[in-house]
Length: 528
Picture 1 (cartoon, helix red, strand yellow):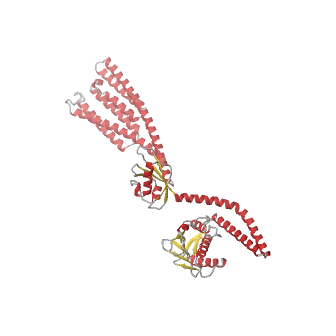
Picture 2 (cartoon, rainbow, N blue to C red):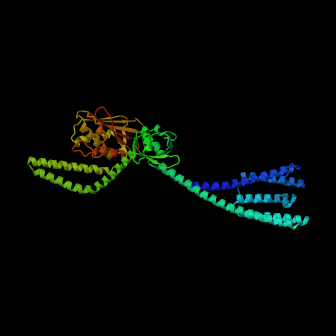
Picture 3 (cartoon, rainbow, N blue to C red):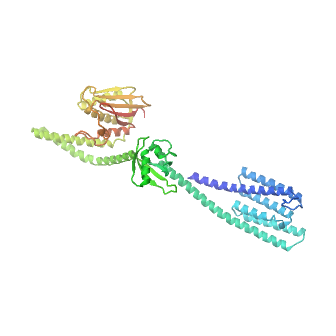
């Protein structure tokens, strides 16, 4: 915004010097005509009388030289504007006074040049100096007339004519001053409006560029006229300006054609072929002369992510508030159940107690898993040697979960270094191993933990593969959703928490396609 204001002030200064340049160009033309008239004497083209030809030639020659120098000075020495203008006007007054005296006074007709000169100086200077110029011109005219009265016959009519002419000089100066004031006011208003418009354009452009939604301006023919950078990202293409809408999304083009026939405020869901994103498009008319239409593109994935984050935030606040209230009575129920089971010998009562204790443990796991979500952002990443960490983790899991030894095998290739928070890594792998062992065949090598690195610069792939049944397509879309589970005793938070912790450590967890079994892969990095 500051740059826009400076530019506007600079443009105003350039306009003043440009006006002075035009004024000096006019003076050069007048000087050239006067000089040419003297050279052509005697002829019908002569502007001056044939008397005093040598004086005419000397004055017009000097005047032509002075005006040429003045014009060059405007180009090469743009300083002291008022001084340059004043010198030019005073030189004109002197030259026109001499030529008028040599031509026979006001009767020569050269007095009209004073009027044109004052009007031009008043408009160019745009100040009160024009009244000073009028006063100097009046004095020059009166001095010339007085000198003529002294050296020749005195005629009262000549002085009356000179007085009227001097009054005309001041009238022209005052009118030029009023016109100049109006021009100054209009220029100042235009300058302020220009600065405001420039600022508004910069702000609007910045707002549009930073919008999270893509914006397209489409003509009636379906051609893209304008767009913002976000639209390029969502459409997955380069600069779409000048293209037709159908060039990068046939669904969007069909939706636009349908909207043109039946305008509606309902959004349209489309998928961009280049980026593969699912977008929500909304068409808005602009009421412009060309009938242009605005298209707002929203990434539904981002909207879903925002909804998920809001859901997690609400869930985190809820669990933080009630965790204490749940765990205390839950601990009391579990402890009391254990005491009752020690003294109970009735098989039916023991079975009911076991059901109660198992469900109490399940509630405890749910509360623990949900509370872990609140600690996903407390990541302190470090280098983990997978060759050492994976066997220790598998051994610990086998002992604590009473799993059969030899089911899980480790295959590390390369340096096998992963940059990850150690506690988060332990929890992620614990969830993945538990999921893999539950769905494996249970034989030797039913679960394979395989590490690849060096595939890309600094990248690491950690696969947890089991030889169980392939997950069907319907469930594949929901495996990472919270509280989704196919087991009656499961919480449905294991894979969801694992993916959240991976994202907190700059990695991602994906379910890869495989012909047999399942393949969960952590895509991480060996360096920060």
